[in-house]
Length: 304
Image (tube, rainbow, N blue to C red; front, side):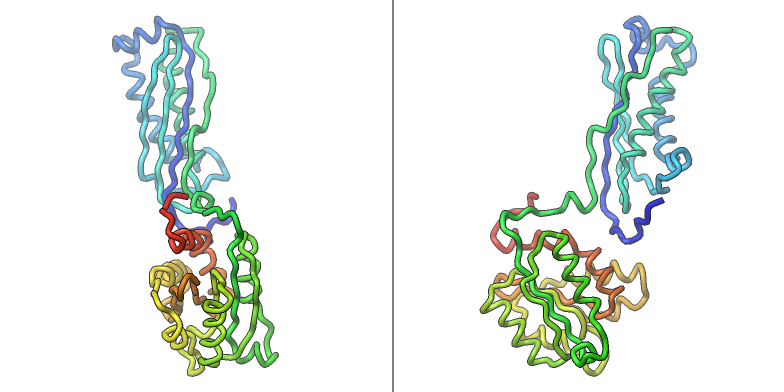
C-alpha cells in the first residue's frame, strides 16, 4: 500500500452509482414486494454497508479506514434501477473505492435476488459521480504567484559548522506549491538581526509570506519567539497550533516548540522548528491550506 501516514486527516466524501438493467415486469414485482427471496432493496442496502466497511478485505491496496457514514438510495427507470451510495469518512485517503465497491455489491445483490425472475438482467455501469476531500480541494489559485522569503536561524549553520537542510526543504516545498522564493538567508540566533530582517521583508519588500526555521525551542540561544513579539502585529495562533498538533501525533516532543505565526501588515510570518523532520511535518500540516490566508488578507471570502 502507499504510505499515507504523512497526510492529515480530513473529511472525505465519495458518491458512486451502479445501474442494473432489468425488465419492467421485474421492477413491478419489486415495487409490489412480490420477490420470492424477500425485499431486494433492503437486502442490497445492508450488503452495500457491509461492502463499504470491508473494501480493504476485497481490494488488496485499499487502506482499512473508519467509515463514518454509508447512505444508499435508489432511482427507478422503466427498465433500470440505479443504486447510489454515499460514503463519508474522516481519514487520510479517499473513499472512492469504498463507494464503488458498495454500489457494485448492491447491484450484484439485486441481481442475485431476482435472477430466477429475469434472464435479461445485466449490470450496465458502475461509475464514480463525485468525490471530495484531501489537500487538492483546498488549493487556492492565485493569478500571480505569491512571493516568499525563507530565513534560517542557526548559530552552527551560520558559522559553517553544519549544512542547512531545513531551509532548503522549505524552499522546495514552497516552489512545489507555486510560490516564488525571492530570498533565502542563513543568520545566527541573534534577536535583533531576526527582527531587522523580518521587518524589512514586510515593511520594505512587501513579501507575502516569510517562513523561518530554527530558534523555537528551549535552548538559551533560541530567541525566535522573542523576536516575533516585536514583529507580529496580529497573531495567528491557529497556524502554529495546527503544526504542533500534527507533529504531536508523530513525536512526543512537538509540544516543546514555541513557534509562532501572525501578520505584520499584509505579510504572513510562520515559524517552523529547526529539525528537518519537524519542518517536514509542519509543511505537511500547513500546506496548501495556509496559502488560503492571502485571500483573506486581500479581503476575499472562503470560497476556493
